[in-house]
Image: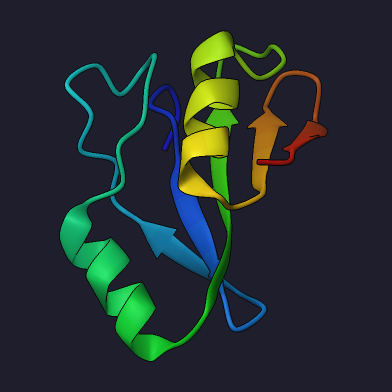
Length: 88
């Protein structure tokens, strides 16, 4: 919830909301491992989503961690109402 970054997964083609447990959730996100485990037990995780409440394109950190995750990422820039897609 704004102003914190929101985060979610796509599991079996459906939106799976997750809790952001980052130390500074206004500027970063970390998916709660319990939420990630539950998603993985439910089905196939096919993408990671998170928001940028203050706007902007994906950061260098977003790009690096997307590549490490091996999953596509979608970043929602809230003020612009624009999706940005990253490929691993």
